[in-house]
Image 1 (cartoon, rainbow, N blue to C red):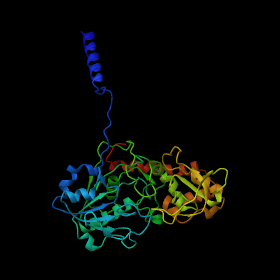
Image 2: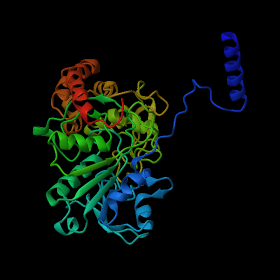
Image 3: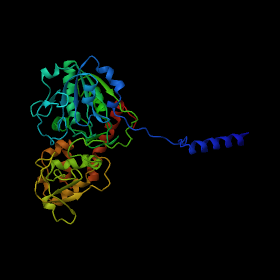
Image 4: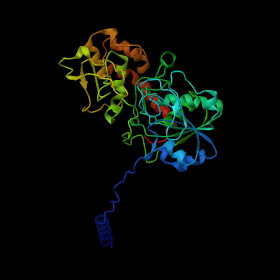
Length: 393
């Protein structure tokens, strides 16, 4: 009898395979769906409300922008707030972007990066009841989209407005690495929370943690989760989040190479491969730095460092991207230039978040020695963040 049952099971499995059905042991991975795609979860929250949106070009729902979707569905959309790089995502890093009107819908766009607006005016806050946040972050402390979200959350808390965050994956997954920001000395426009350089959180999770830890005033907060996503799910961004992160490789290298923006070196702004290379004119012709590039003015990099000047350096476009925060590139370039303290500018501490990394570099410490010093605080943060996670690691 047992042999007969085994034979029947074999025949059924073989028949299913012949018909194209998956083997019972085969796991079919469902595609990740961003929070904005789960309209059943948030459309009811928006009905009867005056709605404002904090978004940019990454807020796509399939082939349609979130603003166009909400406008088409008849929601009372009263305003758009835009972060760094503007609503269309084309402005340079830190460039002032003036407020305007969305040509497609006629809805006013209020820039949070116009050089004056640290928070919206009372008039702007009075124009809506509920704020929808939808922007693709990259999971790095000095990437500013989460800071724009926090500013708006603070304003909403003070004015009694609700906040709905439509979540999107973190392309760095559960990576937690780097020192915790020294808030007393280095809080800035590129660092607003006591978190590591790589924090392993989505935008929705950052919002939850900021409120839960008292870093941001409590507002009425709702997070619409991604579906079919865990922090270990590989996720390649379908849209470049900003002009100088055009590829998956640049996003992967960004945490490590962005530290060069606090030094004498270029990270390839104004070239075809920003954040996939680094260099300096004094390294041109250097045997250990065979890559050469000449930055030029282009969209997203109107006045790049060393514009029109030949730089020697290293290309990482085809290299295996490092996991976590790696200082090997920085240490190598620091030693090659041999200029000591002149290698750095004040932005370095704002990016790395502490003063002791520069000091250890000046003392001749290796990348491994420096990275080992921040590991305990990174691990402590990894444990702290667990209660705010919306997805499995």
